[in-house]
Length: 277
Ligand SMILES: Nc1nc2c(ncn2[C@@H]2O[C@H](COP(=O)(O)OP(=O)(O)OP(=O)(O)O)[C@@H](O)[C@H]2O)c(=O)[nH]1
Ligand SMILES: [Mg+2]
Image (cartoon, rainbow, N blue to C red; front, side):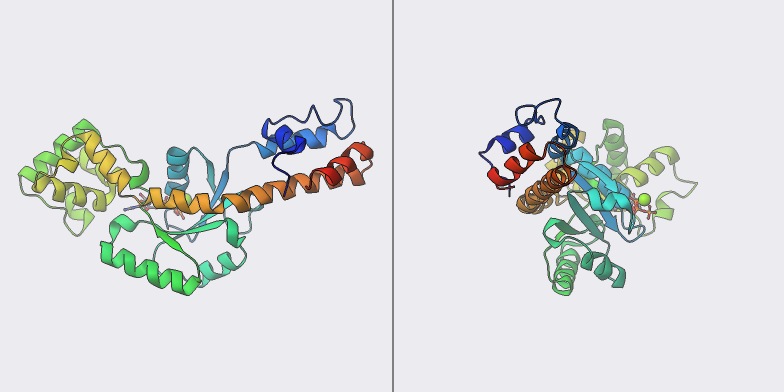
């Protein structure tokens, strides 16, 4: 670990190593690049099997937490550079999930059961238990779609008319979208943005005049608050010491590389010795 009170830590956290080595030092470029990487926002690689909601998850992580999240395919180069991995499951773990997680840095990986809004609370709890026992690690149930949804006034007004007509979400989305139904564009947009699960929950709230659906803003808040993203934030926080250690190790590797190449070796070796890098 880098001594958090030392000049190297201070230089890294300001993103500038100008106080540590002279600007004309041959090591300046390497160290400067390392310092810039050190202060970049958290980078999160979203991984998992096809169709589990990876793109939606990457977008949700960006929108909710302001991190740089992206989908990484198995074995891709960008995977190795990420600070953190979010592994998305859409049910009990399969062989491919076990394989991917076995090759994943355990302390910097968070496993989530995605699309939890499509499950009853009991079914989600049951799957979380099965998955975490099978993987031997915690699993957080989330809805990556609800996490960053915004319901508009028009959408709520439309949902209200459906609820007033006693329309519930049919078990098949196709029936909701049948050509004979009015407002086909609105219906298609709602399916895409809230999914059948979100529409169903909204209609259930509206049918009993629940204050959670009193306004579009209230319904937006309700869907986001029940997305499991607060628990996901906690799980990500738990990984932060390991992320800091990993970033520190990357800085050390750059310093060692610079010293080995003979670039301002004295200054670099002094940093390596005195900073506990
Ligand atoms: N109900 C619900 N649907 C979701 C959620 N997340 C994603 N989806 C839906 O699942 C489908 C696939 O989502 P994507 O984010 O494209 O999944 P992906 O893993 O990137 O898929 P591929 O790139 O095709 O492998 C889309 O129709 C999403 O709207 C969720 O949290 N809840
Ligand atoms: Mg995708």
